[in-house]
Image (tube, rainbow, N blue to C red; front, side, top):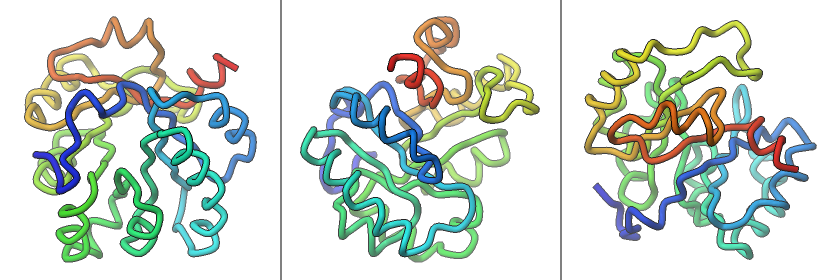
Length: 195
């Protein structure tokens, strides 16, 4: 289910750095990445226009290095920045169903999935899924990781999509969680460790 830009499966990165726009230290990590790692820009809470404007230099850097990048939900900014994809949070799906249909024609739609209900709700609209949490993670210390059978069930439910593991991921954990259909992983701290 590829979009109008017709990305080949091999051109989609296996690793994704989740760049929290509220944390300035993440720039140091971004500037050390190569184009084999994608970047998912996000911010907890509502994304405002000033946030997207501040993202401009980071987007320019990604474009120069050939890094695929994903931005928070915004039709205007996705077109302006020519993003690889758009990250859809729960509240974006409820309020903007028509906009999502239009976005899907031009961009990859990316979602995080934490349970079977979310997977069923998001299955038709999204192209790329991050199943979370795969392992205990420092960014969500109180959240228990998904049991293997639930993780496998989600993989099977979403098997015709691009699936990634998220939460406490690194190369070692990815080998342990390398279930069928899982293309790679996303993370934060794994990229901090490499600096």
